[in-house]
Length: 264
Image (cartoon, rainbow, N blue to C red):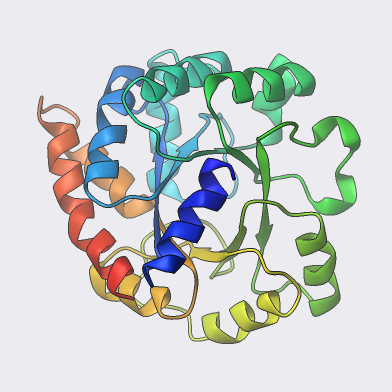
């Protein structure tokens, strides 16, 4: 089993759900990202989702857009992200999924990117702006790099079946229409849509977009196999970025959310 599959198997055996944390690689620096990764793991994060900085992140809300901007201004590049993963691998075995748009992959070339990603220790790739209809063999992840697929609230049942057939690792269900960002409440349609996805696949289904508190995380964890928390964490990275103990402060914010996910 690869890292992603093993993580879900072990969590299922303990009756727990997966806590997945999104951060933007290189925000505010690659050194900070490397320092933060093992602290998030120790705080209860099971899978780390690393955003590849991009100048036009259309699926992201303002918090994550600004994180990408800060990373790019600090000199982040796609190859730099892969080097960042290599450095994380020296201190942590946490599964890592790259959250990216198509353009950064094109900058290196698809084959080169996938090859270097696997060599660096990446376990999965989620491409935000590549619909299944536009997919092609050269874009497919290779080796042990899993191709994570997105499903939206508006995705018809027949399209869900097509997407899950081509997916690997886990399914990422986007709980709301629109962009990423903290929300005051959890969508009322999550249970129904997760069940529709589960009718088509045995892969774990995780839910993201909008989860920002322990209460929301626990509510979503009762319905899915994992919970993704992103903007709320990125917001704290920005808040504490000028402080030397930023990684510890962010980890302390994440700890109760991760505990709530496990209880779910």
